[in-house]
Image (cartoon, rainbow, N blue to C red; front, side):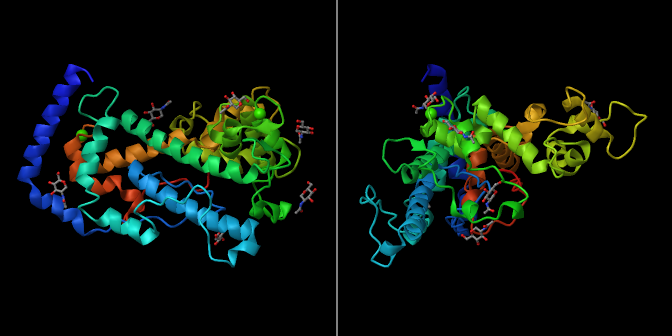
Length: 374
Ligand SMILES: *[C@@H]1O[C@H](CO)[C@@H](O)[C@H](O)[C@H]1NC(C)=O
Ligand SMILES: *[C@@H]1O[C@H](CO)[C@@H](O)[C@H](O)[C@H]1NC(C)=O
Ligand SMILES: *[C@@H]1O[C@H](CO)[C@@H](O)[C@H](O)[C@H]1NC(C)=O
Ligand SMILES: *[C@@H]1O[C@H](CO)[C@@H](O)[C@H](O)[C@H]1NC(C)=O
Ligand SMILES: *[C@@H]1O[C@H](CO)[C@@H](O)[C@H](O)[C@H]1NC(C)=O
Ligand SMILES: *[C@@H]1O[C@H](CO)[C@@H](O)[C@H](O)[C@H]1NC(C)=O
Ligand SMILES: [Ca+2]
Ligand SMILES: [Ca+2]
């Protein structure tokens, strides 16, 4: 740490002491709310859950989710074993003090053990890094959320990989891969979407080096194509989008299919599209026509897979999109002086915003998760 940042932190610490000594009531005001761990974990969930702000909470949730997952996995893969007393799986013998769910919750609500103010004081300098100036900017908070999300995603991917990797070589072949049961049981035609997911073409597109096996990076891409940098997989995602939107099955997306399937999803992200460049054309679908012809590079009146490339990131938001959305939400709630960034004092004044993912009594539901996307 440079001299400047040391001075900044000493200043912050002094300000903090001053603040704490002056407003003891304020800190207690928030105290009757109980923090609750989430229990909405499902195998089939495609909803995007926000990742906890505090890595300690994330760890607790992760351990709990692993156990839940093991249990479901055993019921699914080895039903013959489930009737016996449930044995902890290998590698999980040593349990921390939050042995079970209720203990974990008691732990979080025990102010001696889990002091939210102290947590924020501890986390602040880890987030305030670019530059360390005593303020947390939107981009610093987005990066932080992104780090938490990546940790979480890789943990789940690792766990998934272990269950599919039958010969334990750390790689998944398509023969080893078994799609989730709700994919296998689904009748092809009853889904309007998800048709090509978890099939061989999806697998092959994820296999960047084409050796027929997915390593952890490739397998993570397979599970989360929207976050992948593999061009083959991104093109597959466009192909899949065409398949899902192509109601008349001619292999391409015409204007009608675009207007009724894709346009609304794109428009929400892209305010420019609202402005028609041609003021004389004031029909309802003018912005849609404008975007359509912009995308239709070869002008054949249809959108092909490659022509969807410019908007695929909007159709399938990446982890970074959610990280930024969560950062914006937190700042909007905690930025008391409305300067667009957070000081430690602003954070301490609004501690529950940072633990909102685990609120038991969250009143507002105004955080838009975009459920309809993956
Ligand atoms: C997902 O699983 C939950 C139970 O685990 C079930 O209630 C829900 O209907 C399932 N959703 C879909 C889309 O299959
Ligand atoms: C949490 O820590 C702060 C700062 O150290 C302290 O002032 C406060 O009393 C603590 N709260 C509880 C409930 O222990
Ligand atoms: C789904 O469609 C494929 C061919 O497109 C077919 O081979 C498969 O049996 C179908 N599965 C179900 C469950 O209908
Ligand atoms: C996937 O790649 C393998 C070779 O690694 C090939 O045999 C197979 O036909 C491919 N499948 C699809 C659906 O492209
Ligand atoms: C997985 O394979 C890809 C090439 O397909 C490579 O770029 C990547 O570094 C590998 N990941 C690991 C963790 O070895
Ligand atoms: C869109 O229209 C608004 C006013 O309605 C204007 O402020 C904005 O600059 C326009 N954007 C573009 C890209 O033309
Ligand atoms: Ca590979
Ligand atoms: Ca501020």
